[in-house]
Each structure stands twice: as C-alpha cells, then as structure tokens.
Image (tube, rainbow, N blue to C red):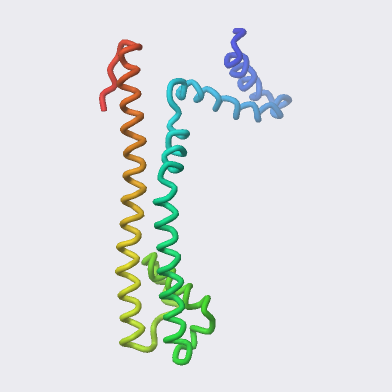
Amino acid sequence: MIAPMQILDLLVVLTLFPILRGLRILRLFKLLRGIKLFKYSNPILEIIRTFKDNALLYVLITFTLAIIVSVLGTAFYLIEVKHNPGVKTIGDGIWWAVVTITTVGYGDITPVVQPLGRMLGVVLMLLGMFTLALFAGIVSSTFLRVLFKLRKDQFRMSNYTNHIVIC
C-alpha cells in the first residue's frame, strides 16, 4: 500500500466522504497510469515526427487550397458584384469559394450570372474535390507509415516479452 498509484487510489476513494470532496481533483492523476503504455514507443510523438517529416507536403497542399479559394473567390466577386445583391465585397466571393470547395453549400450566396457563374462553380467544385482528395491521401499515407512503424516495433518487442502481437 506504499506504491504511489495505490495511495492515489486510496485518496480517490476517500473523496466519497462529503468532507473530502475537495480531493476529487486527484482523480485526474489516475490518467498517469497510461504513461506505462508508452514505455517503448510513443505513438503521439511518432505522429508529430511524421507531420514534421512531411511538413512540405502539408504546406504545399494548404497553399494550393488557399490559392484556389483566393483566385476563384475573387473571380466570382468580379463576375457577380454588379448583378448579385448578396455579393458586396471580395470577402463575400471568398466566402462563396470556401463554402463551395468544402461542399457545404449554405446557399446564402449563389451565382446570378447563370452561365459564367455556374461554370466557375463547377470548376471550383472539381478543383476542390481533387485537392481535398489529394490532402486526404497525404494524411492517410502519413498515418499508415506511423501505424506500420508502431506495429513493427510491437512485433520486434514481442521477442522480448514472450508473446506475439497479431495485427
């Protein structure tokens, strides 16, 4: 009963008494038990390291999205500003581009200049699908690399602990 975690368990049980309810904050320290799980490899640090290793890809795809939204939002503003009462500033055009590229489509701003505005919307939707699919592919490949490395470490460690990790 002298181990730190056992003393913590005792203190947490004591918080059931009304006079000691102020000790309930100690329950948060029970989360420290999870540290033992990361004794040999820390998956959170692996994910952070992988994001750092692929930072150029993430910056590139974010920059590409920003350029697409900025250019096509400004083009939408220039096309619609005289005909559409919902478009008053460039910000409205960029808002429309963000809503369209993310496929949310609130409907608060829609193209009024029919052929040209709709064509711009179609181009933005297709570019958005392509760019977001590319972003999803980059993120998934990043996470798969981390997962495969963690599984490899677990399998390697299974030789030392007399058990096999089945994936």
